[in-house]
Length: 66
Image (cartoon, rainbow, N blue to C red):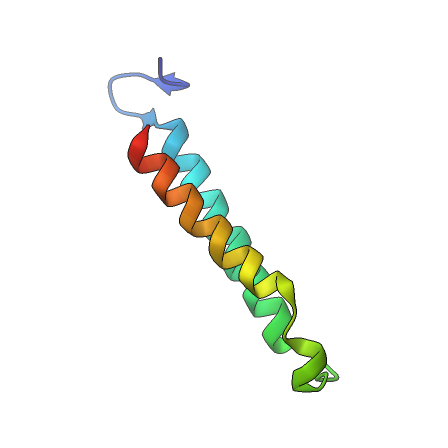
């Protein structure tokens, strides 16, 4: 059952979740890329980059299966 629906307006919950995850991912990458001072490459490359990538892939697969 859709969250909000009438004749002219429809919000799909799965699209809201997808849009929110895109905003969060781009916000994270922008914040990490733009911050000052820049850390060295050994410190900057940690598990958070892999976590964001794998989480995005798992959400897309889950959305496809559902």
